[in-house]
Image (cartoon, rainbow, N blue to C red; front, side, top):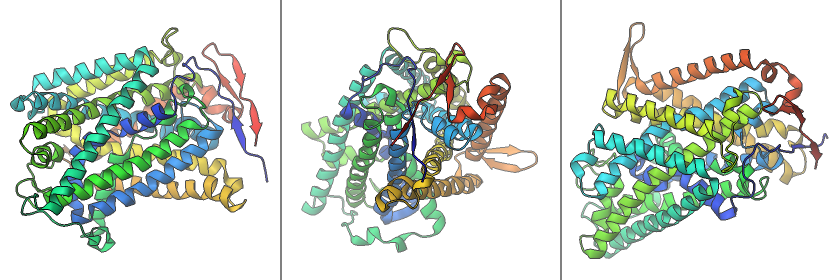
Length: 522
C-alpha cells in the first residue's frame, strides 16, 4: 500500500494564525445565514413537502455532514485556501480543478451574492417600520442600501480577516439565541394552548418517508434544504489564516453542520407545529408569507407587549444581520479561491495580489464586489427582483457541484485506503465516496428540476427551444462563461494545464519562480 501524500502550503501573503477555533466555527455558521435561510426558504420547503419537512432537514443533513467529513480529511493533507480548486486539480486534473472546483465556487458565490444584499436592504426598512419600501424589491432605496452593504462588507473583508471573524462570531451567537428562543416559545405556546386554532401537534409521522406526495416533491425539498445548509465550508477557505490550518478548519466545518442540524430541526418542528401548514393566517403554506415566514411568525409568537415587540424587532435584526453576515462570508471564500488560482498560475497574476499591511487579497476581493454590484443592478431592475430568486435556485447546482468535486478529490486521493483498516477506510474513502454519489445525484436532480419552465419564477423565450425557465438559463450561461474563461486561461497560462508534474510537485510564484511542494508521509 502506498503512503498518503500531504502538501506543505507555501505562503501566499495571508495573515497566519489570525482565526482561532471558535472564530472558525462562527464563520462556518454565519456563512450559512441560518435566520435568513429559514426566513426565505422554509415556507417553500413546507409547500412542497408538507408536514414531513423535519424529515427533509435530517435527510439533507446527511450529504452535508458526509461532505464536511471528506473536506476535513482532504484539508488535513492539503490546507490550501483554494480548497476545492486545489484538491480537484491535484487529485483529478487541472480542468476539473479549474472548472468544477474553482469556477463552481466562484459561480455559486456570485449568483447568491445579489440576493443576500437585497434581503439585507429590504429588512433594514422593515426593521425601522418603512414597510412600503421594504416590501418593494425594486425600490431604489432598497437597491442603494443593498449596494452599500456590498461596499461596506467588502471593506471589512479588505482590511482584515480578524475583524471579519470577530464580527461573524458576535452576530451568529445572538442569531442562534434568538432563533432558539423563537422555537422554544412557539412550542411552549403549542403545549400550553396559546397557539392559533389551526396549529398541529408534533407527531412521529412527520419523520415518515411515506409522507412525500411524490419523488419530485421530495427532490425539490432536498434541493431547497441544500441551499439552507450550504456555506459551512468557508471554514476551510480561510484555512491558511487559521491556527493549525490542517486540523481546526476541518473540525470547525463538521461541528458547524451539527449545530445547523439542531437549529434547523428545532425551528422546523416548532414553527410548523405553531403555525400549521394551512393557507390562512400565519400558516406556512400561505402564499403571502412564503417569501418570509419568520418575520410574520415573530410578532405572533412573541406577542404584542413590550418584551414581545423587542424580541420581534431583534428577530428582524437577526434576519438583517444574517443576510449581511453571509454577504461578507461569501466574499471571503471567493477572494481566496481566486488568490489560490492566481498563485498556481490558473488565473492572471494580478488576482494574486495581497495587501502588504492587511494581508488580505486585494484585486480578488474588489473584483468580486464590483461584479456583484453590476449583477445586482442588472437583474434587480430587469426582472422586478424575480430573476434574483432564480439565480439562488441556480446556485444549488454550482454549490453541489464544487462540494461534490471536493468529495471526489478526497475519494481519489485516498483510494489506496479503500480496504485498509476499517476506521481508516471508512473515514478517508467510503464516507467521501458516499458524499460524492449523493452530491452528484443532487446536481443531476437540480438540472432536471431547473429544466422545467414552471420551476422558475420567470421564463425566457428562445427561438429554437420555446419558453425556458430562467434558473436553467442562468445555469447554462454561467457554465458556458466558466468554460470560456477556462479556455482563455489555458491559452494565457498553458503551464497550469499542460505540465502534469504540477499536479503533484511544483507551483509557481507570482514572479514565475518554481516552488516545490514538500511531500510528507504519514
